[in-house]
Image (tube, rainbow, N blue to C red; front, side, top):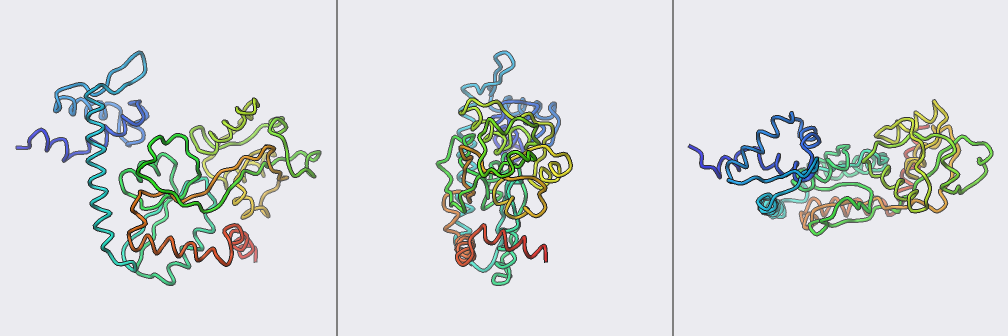
Length: 322
């Protein structure tokens, strides 16, 4: 018969607990876990019975961690950290020319340069299996924390993450947003002030997406109202298709614009002031000590030495049009 401790650690209960502690919302946590809210509630109550104390309490509609919940969260994070460190140490002894590399790519990022690099990397490293998955920001952080991906490719700074100590970053390029519009009177202008961009409706990324929040903060800091959003999509390609068909405005990363400007039926201008950020690798500290990860990152730098990132993006556009 299982002890109470075995019941906790041999099930998904801790994963459910961590997700609820992260969102502090039963409905949202259940959706992210892919289970029903009653099933989540049942697992949390089971955990509370096992430890002998409530882990959460509510004030109005807001959920909070109890003192026991804080203790459980700290212990659970320590457990996952020990397992992650052990996994990384085992992998550090592995061969650079064998194994798997799992990468999470933020869905709003232009992927052509990464696809061409990975194809080139394969030519020299046939026994290293690279998996590149499109993910939301929340999925990326969840899988980084649980050591399910080795590298994340995402935009920074990410102000939603408060605990950066376990992570390291490696900048790929400085990125910026390009304003795409259909106003002929502004067609000759290279820069457009934020307040001038909201005269017509926009198509945007969904709420909670990095670029949506980033745009909101930039407009808010300049005391400019958010653009009126008439539709929301998760990928830049979908946004491009929508503006081509409807004539509304949007903002897309410069790298995507450089890759697809022949397909974009809109005028382009920079924002004034500019909306700038970084495209970076993010990974748990020590990941770059694993031979195949270190070699992968070195190969990435070498691939973009002769022809930089944006040049590679443009090269891919030309090849597609040939």
